[in-house]
Length: 386
Image (cartoon, rainbow, N blue to C red; front, side, top):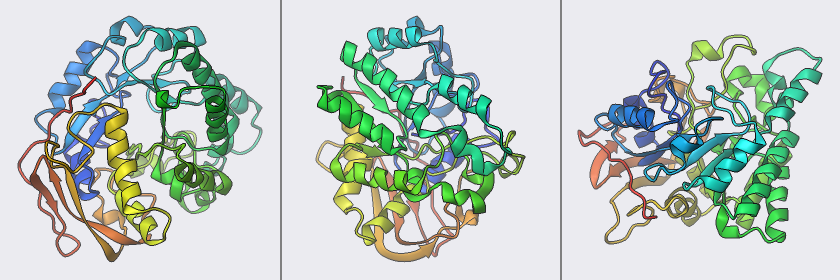
């Protein structure tokens, strides 16, 4: 789950810098979101993005189509996309589906999986209208409270239950959301029709970090309370959370250094996800097999990606070689993303990516902490076994 900013915002990230960041983080395949410029909301714009990426990507990739208020007929039969992304609340870009009748149309008619950004726009607008405090980075989580995520999630799950539609919940971040999913499962919602992802920033950071990071902690959905953060770990433990994905969304330092109302939302993550999870293994929060499932097998299975997700004969040789005992420090100057920063800067971790292979080709080799090797082989677009 990445935003590599092509086309339209390559000053923040392009497919070369995004690919390098992914490789340095042991990530071999990314699914790119549709809120680009122009947005990926029709066949013409999908082919535009495809042509821009296919000669530049060092890693494997797939594309999301985006839902808009008027493009159901354009995208409902797409078979060559990961899913259709639906923003129920406003975020980066101008994609928004806040009309329940339009939303029902996508649930009832669209063939691809629906991937949901579950925040209610009406709830967000109401919360903003009632806010009387000072607009500083620390209030971002208050302006997008858990109840807005709960409201949106109930709306989409009621429709999905009605039409028996397969949906994927992006960046789940609150205990309320997990309780809602559990409630629907107990009501008979088929478990095979829902998958849930959580991000590293919602696993490892909480709203306490605004004091030190300011706008560099601003993201949608926002960082939550410590109890919500711990609930995400509980969701992994009890199996409600299906996968971990980065929502890598880079913005330049100069953009983040603006006043709160002008600063964009989004964090980097594709290079730091695996090291953070390896550190969690060393802290006995996860096992290596948990990582293999949450980051590889489950995503490939959930999105029907052909020949990926397992180390077996007949599968693509997409591999990360790790040193589980390596102690090191995450630093901004080592981030390959064009934006050049990470919210996890100066964090000491145990576990490092040493080499990354894509389709059997050595594409990254970590040497002496600073030198690296990127092969000249390009990645390829994924295919689906639907």
